Image (tube, rainbow over all chains, first blue to last red; front, side, top):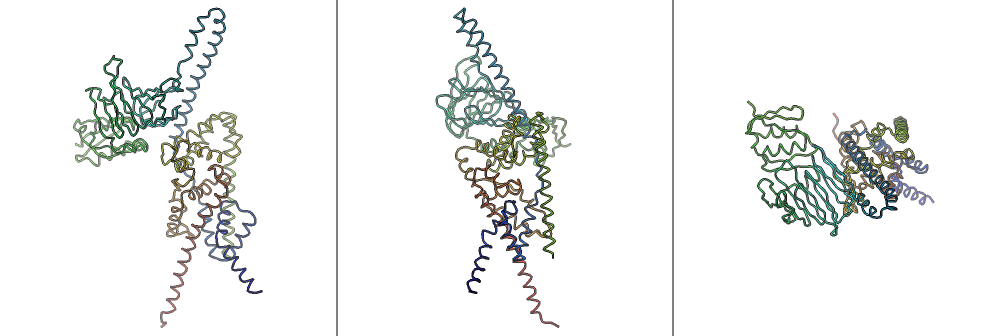
Length: 351
Length: 225
């Protein structure tokens, strides 16, 4: 008799110490325990001082939840942009459906008397409604197009795309810089118009850089196939087509009318997906142009010599101008000084 | 006796925690009715500030990309704003927001990564490790580091569920609904987390206790004068 009861006790304590008890402990912390579980937990706590010591500490950790402060203003701005965009497009929508209703009434009236007008009026309705996104300096955004193509849009960039890709092609208009992951559809070529030139795609990942103020227009192709169409002349309707090889960048210089082909720079993905811009042997003048778009601060050179200085390194789009200029200052051999005045940053050699 | 005092302290802190939560719930309810009936944008901004940062962290665990996570959060609130007239009907806005964020997050992932995320084995959870708890009488620097390491080494799915239950104070049922898994899994995963932390605490207490015993033993062997 005695032996059996002893083994019973041993069995019970083993059971209590394993999984079950931790389930009761975590249930207690999370406030999910049943009465039975609470009772079992109490028994465990009473059984040994160590158990109580452990539980006290777990409770202290569990109950420590400081308010997590986070700057939400940028996200709120994104939300506001989206609401603004929506209200804009729904206005276009309303206008279209309003137009539809009027033309339907007109059709009824006119159609009864003059048959020919019936064929003329519907022509008005087929106009495409466009969405237009403008990303200001010092900002970035991401959109999914109606055909589920993903677009990452860089700073000071404008993208215009139809509310619906209803025609034979998917056509959009870009000034600035964007990275595309095009949803595959071989029946509807994807065309990005960049000023006079354009890029034709079937389904692929690529980026386009085409700022009107820069002489260079660039396309970087990650995978798939794209066709870079360059207009033969100012007023010509013909294009000269070039194919870009995957993993390569093609650059067209508007001033010299030349094309160069090179491998995609290192850190390409970092730039688009993490906002990290890496540069190698780049002049401060060229960096200044990028900084202006990214941080919305214009760098003014008070000494022309500084423009030609070259740097290697990287900076993050989510960072700020001070970190950038401090890094420049610290890596310069000749001492440099700067001052910020509104949106302008003056830099000069230290006298 | 000391044990008794601690118990009272615990009930106290629990009590305060509940009062805080009740007040917050009431605050959220009033915000929702302002948004729903008066189209109050300021109230919406307050609701946004209450949850946006946490939802951002949550979404980032899956996307591992700040920019995309920001898009997800603004998307979730955009949809909430569109349906603001029925917002007061949500009996539990927090659970709704987490669920909506999870679904939107999946939409932003490509097919391969979506499969991984659904199995929850590939998430990257940021717990704000340095703020697990301050150093106290009960938890000194050494123990704090041990616990932090233990939590850090939890499997991703386990860590995520631990965070949702502890930091976000979501009920098992709410977590299960948000992540589309069973309540049993939540219970199981949280048990694993608490067991792991509990065991390292036990180990630490045991080691330090035996150290003390060694000292006593040593003293016994030191020949007296």
